[in-house]
Amino acid sequence: MRNTKQREAIIEVLKNGDHLSAEDIYSKVNETMKVDLSTVYRNLNIMYNNGKIVKVTTSDGVNKFCLSIRHHSHLICLKCNKIYEIPCCLSNELHEICNKMEFDDREHNINVYGYCKECSKKMKGKD
Amino acid sequence: MRNTKQREAIIEVLKNGDHLSAEDIYSKVNETMKVDLSTVYRNLNIMYNNGKIVKVTTSDGVNKFCLSIRHHSHLICLKCNKIYEIPCCLSNELHEICNKMEFDDREHNINVYGYCKECSKKMKGKD
DNA sequence: GTAATTGCAAAAAGTTTGCAATTCG
DNA sequence: CGAATTGCAAACTTTTTGCAATTAC
Image (cartoon, rainbow over all chains, first blue to last red; front, side, top):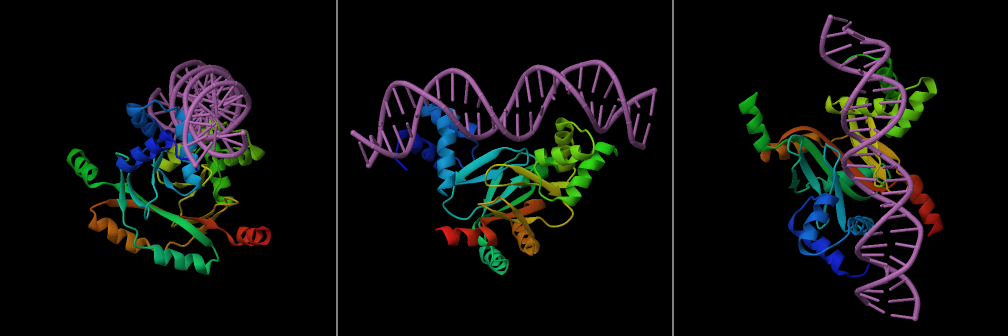
């Protein structure tokens, strides 16, 4: 993996805003410099295959990416599609289960779908 | 939600083969009767929104669907993309976390990516 | 009857690819 | 220099949509 200014810019964007779609990243990068959308996709793929980033799919089917620095478990709002990161405390339990099933686990993500505090509030008001 | 023969056929297919892509479902249904791909998608969307089915994305980006009868936690092989279901024993722990974060959790899925027994074996042989 | 559903065709959205030019190490 | 990466345009895949005809309740 080389160190190009395009890739750096993409990583920079990911460092700041977490959980961005390819399109999001493309827009943000292009505020600073001109980078092609295909370059964004190619880099996301490379980084994904190298385990540098993590992919999360919101309930409306949009893939969002974030740097895989630490654990990746998410609360995903069904209303506003915001993604909240939670510290994953279940790694050991999961690993245990995989051991039993002879599954060589490399990565996991826990996605909880529901309604975030804000949306819950709003919905209570309206309904 | 009405009860059409197309929808019944789709459900029937899902009952038998678990974790199928829209394309898979389309093919299988069409072994018996003629159903349009758009009908498959429309039904999958409706059923998804009504919580009847669950969506899982394999590492190669393919969306797969299965009936949401019970818990849904998966071991997803990075090599062969097969999806193994595991009984989710972490519901309580997760719910606890959501409570603390004031997140109204409705559904969760735990996806563990790694290598299944068979693929692990094969890889050991080769590498 | 009427509202939901379907098939068909066409469009939209998301992602990948071929190729020549460029750039990093 | 040589391999990896880029931009551009075009292709491909997946999913959605408009519309008229049909069907379930």
